[in-house]
Image (cartoon, rainbow, N blue to C red):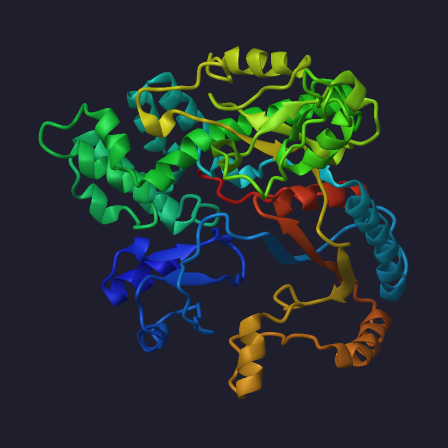
Length: 491
């Protein structure tokens, strides 16, 4: 999004002129297609030269722009560094790599075949002291003042680090320090400036609130302040609440019944039309005993219902038929236009949402006067698995900044004879260098140096599935000792 904002400013167009199928991870080297409305390729190429830490290219013209969700999935190449396996701690490096490879192979095979619970990732719930789902609860409760205060919350540790640069500077980023300083200034003065001067531009939600509330006579207009936040950003808060409810319910469903298919479980209508037609058999007969011939789905005009994702509950007979598996089952996020499971799981929604953590809400009362928080709901698969089998490689290394994966930019620059941006550090290790690496590993082992292990994973997931959740399951299966970093301590 920062790249899009920069390009929009340079081209003097609105950011909405740019369209994309989905957003990418902030902390990653990513590649994606983006469309720009009525723009010449030569202008893009010229502006692209001014980009830092990003590149654009591969231009083509199309009659239509991209739309959100217009992708089948994402491909990930992930490097897990300093992996510590319970059974791969002894012996020389070659033996440790061999043992670790067997462990990862077994875990990857299990995940590819059995899948993982399709949880929403932790990044869905924010990184600051107040979670995004907490803001969403207050918006749904109609507590707009509470929602604004939650967004403008900051930690005392961040403020202390801002006021004293030597306090916690190793654990608290400069952005977090400036954010706390700006929010503190606004809270104590009620004025937009100098708070907006101190606030980093990336905190657009906080900036929108400060700008609105700091205006004359608008200090208590909390609904107006929330409406000043860009719509796609403020929707994140209520969607985070839906995600929380889904995650809690999915855990409860798995805890109670595992991969068993139950009567009342929901499946998507469009995915199983042929099974319904087979089950009907010769039952569609009119009053005169004549078989009713149903038109094929592509012979009739578009039904309004077909524009939306619909689900239905399985009967006892269907649940026991063996035609449906756990991979067919969906759970709804709470909303006014979804069907809840026709079994005991429906009570899980009611119980959690009525609790203090759930905000005292009712899953059957999700309409609100403010349309942006009037949630229709959606359906999400309970268990998913990667598109293809996960591939991997276990490598040993010494330097923490060693790069294991060649990016698209690396390939382009190599082809054009340019110097890679990684020239100052250890270079990408090519396949034809493996023999040299083996010799180097042996020499270092002989010197008694213990090398670290890295696992390079390649997997493909459908859109809206979180690689972090797949990794969590993979590492649990592989017996990796999880490391809990102490970063963002001031948030």
